[in-house]
Length: 253
Image (cartoon, rainbow, N blue to C red; front, side):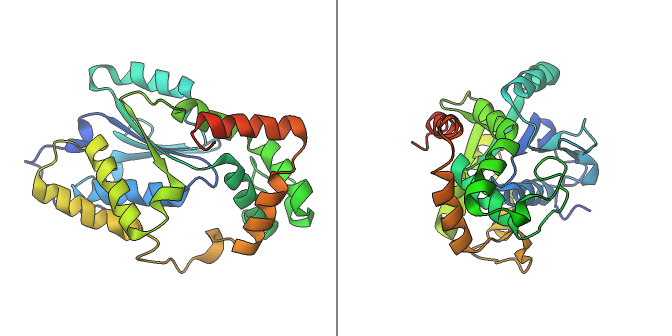
């Protein structure tokens, strides 16, 4: 249900464009999902205004605000641009260093989270794999999803596309606030000051530095991630070369 303040007489700002929020496995999915809902619900958006699509499920695809997990690509962006017509799209994506995503995914699935995940580890192999084998396996499993991320958000981005770096927005509350200001400038540049303040306050609830979640399922051990990242740096040559290319195109190298 909506927790917003907009009355029916006020303009539904979320209908000005087709608003897209794109994430990828271990790129900051929960963060951008919550941020999107907090911002638009604070302005009066209701459940019917939000849609969701991933590789194996979808709901309310015609909603003005669509959250996309793992599927937003350059091709999807073009389809969305055409479908949105004169309104145009405003696509914000949470991206992360591809090698860090591999390391995070290995530790997450190695702990037994999301068993039988149909895209990432359908046969539950990762819990019994060591870091070297496991990171290379995850790199292959996540290849198409990360390729989608790179193609959609490589530098330079078009004007209807905005990149949120997970490393920056999660680093500190000051960085979080700065990234939220940039996101509001991109999504809702004409927002009245009082509405912007509401959106800003609502968005702050997604800041894990201010409000650490009690759900530790998505939080990996730093020791595991350090080991896994070192292992990812030792992946077979062709695979590592592919990921180095991904890093360069996203501005991580």
